[in-house]
Image (cartoon, rainbow, N blue to C red; front, side, top):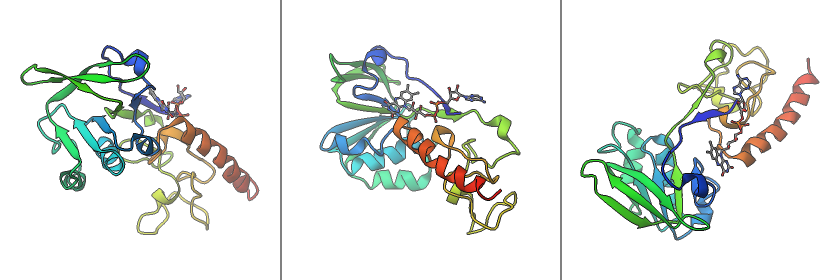
Length: 218
Ligand SMILES: Cc1cc2nc3c(=O)[nH]c(=O)nc-3n(C[C@H](O)[C@H](O)[C@H](O)COP(=O)(O)OP(=O)(O)OC[C@H]3O[C@@H](n4cnc5c(N)ncnc54)[C@H](O)[C@@H]3O)c2cc1C
């Protein structure tokens, strides 16, 4: 079922999306950003986790956040990690006003929301984390979801090593299996998913094996 993404509607996005400008990402892209300055848009946990990950490879990570600080939008443990990471800079009250480049991203314009001041910054990688919401309300009471509505599966269902109450079998849920035996979740809708095409396709291929295993025992 995927997720509903919030989009960044600024000039240049249509042309440069996929060519230096990306929604989500982080895990796989980090290696290709080695020694670059990476811009991350957003101040919630997904942006923070991506910034931490990029900081291991990139020369510098610049987080562009609309608010005055991260405290209202990000978990404390992550803010602490970011503060301790010397190559992450948090630019508060900053929004992307445009993205520019011929074949791929070359520069972004960033506006200060307080003063209105506009800056042009050279950039080759911009990762956008401004919200993705699963449309799983109709699954309420059917399969277990996290507090944002993403479907829980496999080891994420075990709390203190205990299986969920709805679980009726003598084995643990398999990797992509939900809290109901025989119902599986793959792709963006799954809690903890990578949110890339290749991972969605990969999970779809892997789940076939689990479905066969399940069907062999019913
Ligand atoms: C703007 C943008 C750019 C992206 N760029 C990249 C990129 O460059 N590289 C990359 O790897 N990934 C990219 N992604 C992420 C990638 O698109 C997703 O990770 C991938 O599409 C997830 O696949 P999925 O099958 O889980 O969900 P989706 O592709 O979202 O498919 C879910 C489908 O289920 C349908 N659906 C939802 N609810 C129901 C329902 N109740 N009943 C029936 N059907 C339903 C939806 O309409 C949709 O067609 C991008 C995403 C966005 C939004």
